[in-house]
Image (cartoon, rainbow, N blue to C red; front, side, top):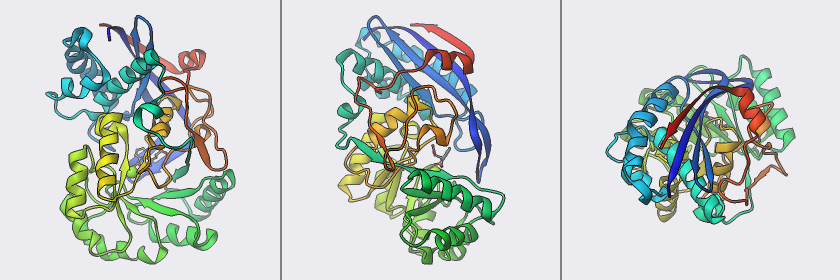
Length: 369
Ligand code: OSB
Ligand code: MG
């Protein structure tokens, strides 16, 4: 495949309400949208890095620079041998920067699949037409505010609720949501690394609430700590930040650091590595689900395709567009009985709305290939 141009667009997407986690509060999603142009196709993807390095060490300004100065030259060196399958190997010498690598692989894969008319779902091995949708609910100022938010999401049809937690906002919100919505509600929590092993007895107090899982309670490099915590609580541990590759997944499973994995393609360098994690987990009988990074319709389309693979057995953070944005960059993803439909068109299967994109674009950088 011969690329002519790669465009990097910095886009500002206002969120419909602030999203608070243990690491910060966002009122907008700032994102780099990447467009790859070949002679006969174009490919789109978005970089999941945030404006600030708080979820991971990656952040948007650094990502743009790494893409331009360190990653694109290595792809250019491949000449006409370039294909999505070779991106990981070509970029291997550059340490880390998984989100920057992921956006390039994804845009190139999208262009490639457009050329052959194959959808992301078919290419990755999707076995479902629709995927069950969960929703990630941020930390709120009060319990009544949280209960109103959860009630609203359940009325819309969401099939699973994830509560963001941190020290001081954990037992009370979980108890309140269980009491109000009952024991049948699929409920889980995400701490984004806010606890330590010294909190084990406190976290064990969540055990009676029959949570589906507790996501990333401790630091991302603390595999052993998670393995120890798993022996002290009955809630299954799910890892997010800790899993950056299929090798990490194998290590975490072998150590007993998690019994469920949140798969985010951006965090692991792309959809091909994400599928390897799916496969490693499936081989060990470990269920996975598809996480999210407040994606626009561009990233969401590919995530929904991934979530249709067989071992994605828990509802993902694959919510409808209106959970995040008043106006998405594509036709909105909407809930149908609590599910999102897997796009079937070529590539990611959704079209970017040019006028909307132009209206939220702050700057555009064109790299001649
Ligand atoms: O930890 O899963 C996370 C959003 C941004 C960064 C990290 C996380 C999240 C979410 C929301 O929980 C996922 C989504 O709805 O896209
Ligand atoms: Mg998480």
